[in-house]
Image 1 (tube, rainbow over the protein chains, first blue to last red):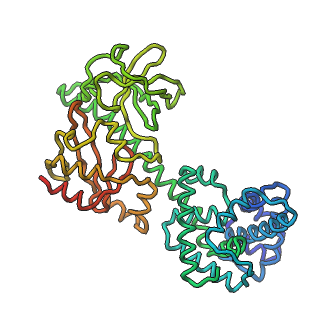
Image 2: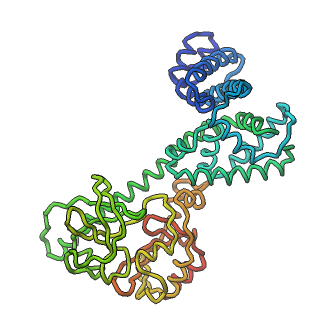
Image 3: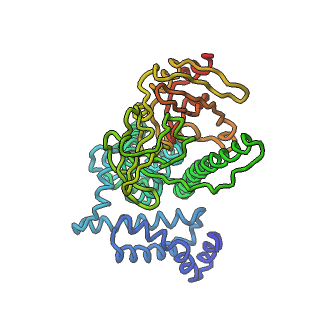
Length: 186
Length: 271
């Protein structure tokens, strides 16, 4: 079943939509959740929340790219759950490492940005990712959107760990400069 | 902004980038597979050239003896082929069977690429490079010839040249470049200037640098190259590399090296 047909099922309020979503994108969403939470039970719950959110969002929403739409929902839910876990001092090791890497792109500030500024930052990041070679862009997204580990990336891209690390390091440095130039308060 | 906020912002990037990231990995893998297929095809081509050449030399009789499978060993970050083919070994000035009297220093252990068998590796007496070594397995001695480095291992040009015993322009006895239509002689100093200043780049960096934003058709049409042979002093070795004149790269033994376009132009105009 193609994505448009699945979206149509949501719009028709057919419960088969969830079943078809799970069949096609269950593993994809589970992987994103598990990469962030590193826990099977939490990842399963996150997956169920994803289906519920998708059910609530369609209609009125009609995504152009269902996989990215579901991926973003899963990621947001997993991130919120992660923050909750962190408050309970149950921080996943991989996630803590990933966030510490991103610290290199920003300077210390406790101010919470509003969603408009976040959208501008996201636009800047998107523009940057369009400007770099495709493989670099793919690597950055696989690391910081899908939260894959360095080892996983090494296997998927068939690069050494050190090469992956150095490519990401260079990109973080470039992104930091671009964010500063764009006047993003960081 | 905290790292968590930035992480949240990354979650808001364009959908197209997210979807394309998966496709780009597949595309990149495909490129790598094409390269590997090309390498295998090159080996097959070499295997086919030998009987065809024999056919021509013997005026019409084809040697139908079965082609032996390659026996490849990994040693010191490179692939070596174990061989008793004296058509190959004679090119290195080796005419006698490997035995205990030929071995010099113990260098380490090699491992078979498909059977995981270990063997001891020795340098050869009075042989100045490590492009051919002696392998000892189960009290049997045989030669193994350098093929290329294991993919994605960074190999500085000096290391690659030292494997072949080349340390200065004087080690280069004769060099010539092949173009589509002719063969041109090159100066030893020009070729030394080119290869001694070459800078290693990984295959992915090479593809990113040269082919980023290029269509497949453009890549094919732009990929013209010139092949150069160098014959080194002492042992006679055919040191072959491909020159990418338009891009400022050379490709040898499965590695890419960045060089100045001026050096390539100087080499190819130095007839």
